[in-house]
Image (cartoon, rainbow, N blue to C red; front, side):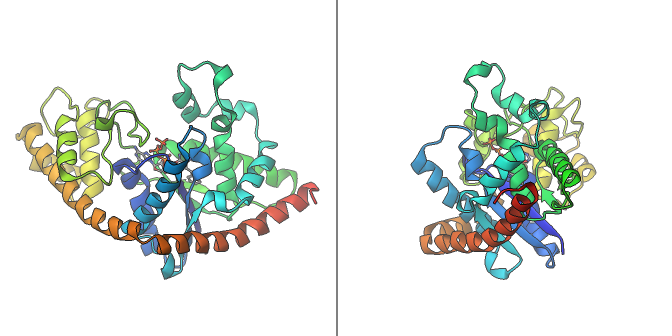
Length: 334
Ligand code: ATP
Ligand code: LTN
C-alpha cells in the first residue's frame, strides 16, 4: 500500500497556485489510487513561524479544511484523512528529536528560508522559521510516507527529509521510509501575477499578485487584466524569455488540462494577449464559482468540520505514536 502525505499552511487564504501545484493533485491521487492511504495536514504549527492573529489562525484552519472538502477530499470515503497538525503532539516531539540529526549547514542551504528572510538582520530572525524544514520532515516520516505531492518550492525540503531519514536509519536501523516528492507536470510553480520572477504566495502583501480560490468573478477579471505581460503581444510558451505569458498559459492549463500548450498557442495565434486574458479570466472565474458554492456549504457546517478534525486526530495519533515510540526506543528515551 502506498502512503501519501502532504500539508498546507493556514497562513492565508488558498490561492490558485496552491490549487494548481498541490491541492488539485491531491484530489486526483485520492481518486486514482483507491488502495493508497492519504493524509492531508493543515500545518498550523508551520504557520506560526510567521506572526499570526490567534482568532484568524483558528478561522483559517477551518477555512482550509472546508476548501479541501469542497475540492473533493472525502474523509468519509475511507482512504483519505484530513488532520490538523497541532492536534497530534508527536509531530512536535519527533521534530525535536530530528533536530539532533540535522546540521546547521543543511538548514543554511534552504532557499525558502533565505527568500523569506532576505534583507533582514540574522539576530532578529525566529528560530522556528529556520527550523521549519525539520518539522516538515517529522510530519512526513511519522506516517511511513512514500509520496509527498507538493509544489516545486518544497522539493528541497523533501530532499532534506530524505537525508535526515537515511542518516537516522544508518545510525540505528531502518525505521523510516525514505519518501519521494512528486510535482505536477505543468504548474508546479505558478508565479506572482505582478512579478513573474517570484512565486505566487498566499501571504504576499500585494493582492494583485495572486488569485484566491474565494475571489469573485470581478476580482478574477481585474487581476488577470492587470497581470503583467511580456513585450511581444503573442501567446507563446517560453518561460525563459516570456515568463509572464508562460505563467498565464500554465494557469490556463491548470484549469483546463485538455488543451495542450501547442493547442493553446495555435488557438490564440495572431490574436494577441487581450483575447487570451479575457478567455482565461472567464475559465478561472467559472471554475471558481462552482467551487465557492461547495466551499460555502461545507464552511457553514461547523459540527461537520469539528467531526473531520476529531476523526483525523484519532486516526493519525495512533499511527504517529507508534512511529514515535519506535524512534524513542531506538535512541534510549523512556
Ligand atoms: P506562504 O505564502 O504562507 O508561505 P504558500 O502560498 O507558499 O504559503 P504553502 O501553504 O506553503 O503555500 O504551500 C502549500 C502547497 O502549495 C505546497 O505544496 C506548495 O508547494 C504549493 N504551492 C504554494 N504556492 C505555489 C505556487 N505558486 N505554485 C505551485 N504550487 C504552490
Ligand atoms: N512546508 C510546506 C507545508 C508542509 C508540508 C509538510 C508539505 C508542512 N509539512 C509535509 C508536505 C509534507 C509548504 O508548503 N510550505
